[in-house]
Length: 239
Length: 288
Image (tube, rainbow over all chains, first blue to last red; front, side):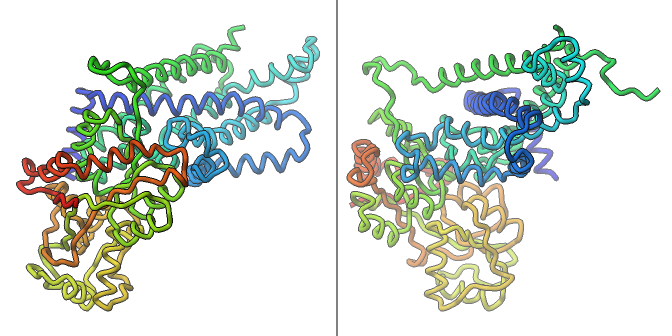
């Protein structure tokens, strides 16, 4: 218990005196995970909506695949990316292994199924009236589809939050494809592993606290955004 | 159109966010302006090595000095020797610094490396709890100590990760004529620092390199049980990856690194590392 208290105290102290290395690691963590999230969003939201709305061939099967991949073990995603990017692998000539790009690729692999699957669910949960009334009001098919996605935004935002939470807290994949190289591919989670291995418990706790604070701030930002964007009558109220 | 804000605004905000960070990261990676040299792009060498060299702090001490001399920034990927050799066999790194002599020689014979040179050694020690259930404290005979641990079924933590340390441990069991099996023999499958932690929690014996032990000594309670046996010698070698097999590797840099490590200066620096902190050197330079 003493170690934990001591470590937490030292941890807070370290955060107050953020050194350049911790700052750089934090920036890289955010940079990699947010980039992965944006790519996953650009690919995942439209494909999720398409799966939900259109009669794509084998739609149920694809949804099932996506739902399965939502639980893809990070270290397996890492291994697949590793094997593809390794010099021996099919994409070896691009020399991407042990770079932040490789980490982004692995995280996209983890975030895409979540964004796609949860977006599809959010869209499917909407009542038929949304489409019907849009069409009645003179919307084209394309416009109606956009309205539907817009109406599902709460679920889609939840999907993005979930995906970001997953990738930024993930260690197995980035350790494998990034290699935890100091100043290049070392992120918050791999630092925690390294500091623990080196017996620097306080530093490990400090980095863990930074990770938690980032999650908290991101969720806070989303909460504030939601407040600005949703009218209160959207909420179910028990009267 | 207030409603549209939700997703669009969020996406835009995220994009701005990550662009800022990408720019920020880019800035930190740019090397500080060097007046003595033209602004040549930073040269980067990729090295796979063992967790022991990283966890002991040796590389944090040596690599900045190597960069001063050569201009190469060395990117370190610290894994077990087994995995490091595999990375070398795939041509994913430029140079190896590992400790499993037989496997390294096999590696070079297979054409994956251009040569292998001795750099330094440290020694392994057996550490264990002060209660010493197997009664081996103070012994200098590692084979006898291993036999006693097995006979008393005292808990023993093994790396179990095909690393240099793990190979060394297995070779000692083999020499002692014991097949380590049973509830007392625990394999962690992790690096030395992690394994030390597990052994400490379980009050068990483990085989550890002296560098990792000294660096973590204050954090944990285990004590030195057996040291000074020749069987516990731990030789490190440096191997540049063969450019004929993997044209993309930076062989020039790898050779420069290997030569620097075995140079008079490199050897002297290795011999001094740890003296101020631990009162003894962690690695003994022995390049020929």
